[in-house]
Image (cartoon, rainbow, N blue to C red):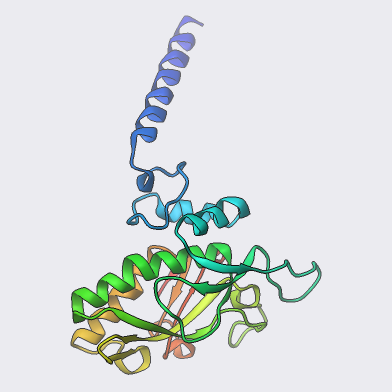
Length: 227
């Protein structure tokens, strides 16, 4: 019994030390800390974003703190085939989008982080020009996954399709035209695709299948794919 008591004591001390060390970490590396969408992503960012899917208050607070402008949407009545829950219409972030976006709060949070910490810095670094607009096919759409009978994450406003980027110098980077090509355009698309994989649950591009030959699909659904 004395041996068990000693082991329990050591286990308690070890747990206490771990808690102290975790609390001392910067918020972006601490999976238990509230997410800061304006902070550079860290090792805990994926877990923090995932946690927002089940915490409406924390999610909208994170958007407010980052000064994301949006119009909240009423939840769709239960029983509907498609619907929006904990969702919003995105009014303004740092970069304009080519279409109106209706998305879940968690999807919006991931989109904002991708835009702020991946897309915008990559454009300046690679092209020396800021992004003027992100070209998108939209977000909410009551439809199935292409070729299946399963509802897409678009049916719940939990996904966005991005087809390209327009820079302030007039240059256009198009997924269909430039994916896999040499040069700055191809390098930029690879950068923003890999960066999306670090933030979204699912990121699909031209290498996934023919249905994604002209855009990146990024969602915060239950899956876990980067292709």
